[in-house]
Length: 116
Image (tube, rainbow, N blue to C red; front, side, top):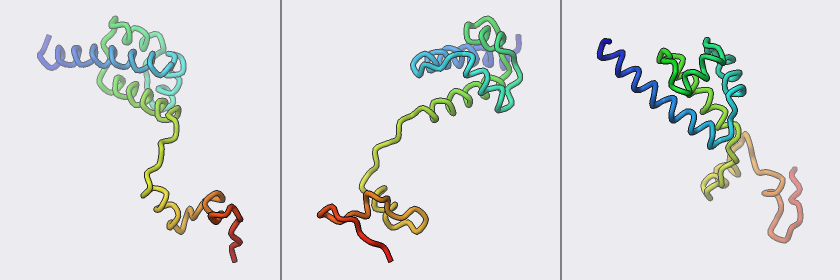
């Protein structure tokens, strides 16, 4: 086995280990991951993905990275909205695109500000 092949196998083993841990922590099942992976261009079967996750199959780097991308995109979809900093709110208030939200258009006494 060539050096880059053994390095690739050890990287793949670690990727599989960490991907499975991420899936468990985020409650992403294999079917959901595989479907998303396939939709973004992945080309291995769900059976092969399962074998990879359980260290029974070494995958090419591209397929491993597409699995990681699919998992990361699924994580981003389920992440709760982040808490804004003061600067974020101020930036939204002055943004001509977004403008203030209806809650931000109220004056301190609770009366809605009428816009012209």
